[in-house]
Image (cartoon, rainbow, N blue to C red; front, side, top):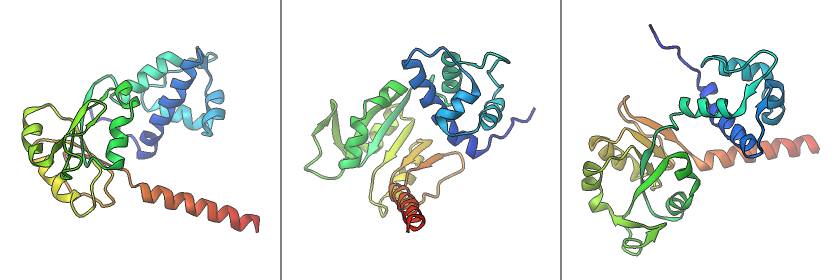
Length: 213
């Protein structure tokens, strides 16, 4: 039986559902209706029901959704019941910020190594993890279970480093470099172009100013 293809838009909304439901759990909310959830998330109740029906629905007529159960099930859909080992390539400000973000560990993403070519950074520790020389990268990847490599590199260096990582067995690339990577189809790449996000914010501000004039 062919697996149902889930749209990218639905997948993009799943982390938001997970985050909002996590906030509700922290407030000891036991159940919530799609209408109440829609008001919090600014997504229509119909859209929420359609999204969740892709995975089985999870709600009960007249009751809504059990917050703890739905949070747990969406976590499973997102693969968060597993632990992922991460390495960070590039120990500049952004790389160190990622390593310092403790919430990743709470989600099951464990930073196992940080690498750089800058001799001033090599040997420093970030949250107890020593920054290693790039020369040690291949041996580390080949001899440790590494699921995801985060690239916080200049765009000129990112394609070759990504290609090497794939050759050594990495199947997940979290790419912060401002360039598109062309890698085999069996490698999962998530691009995070910070400048693109900032430019979208600039556009929205510009449009609001036009409306105000």
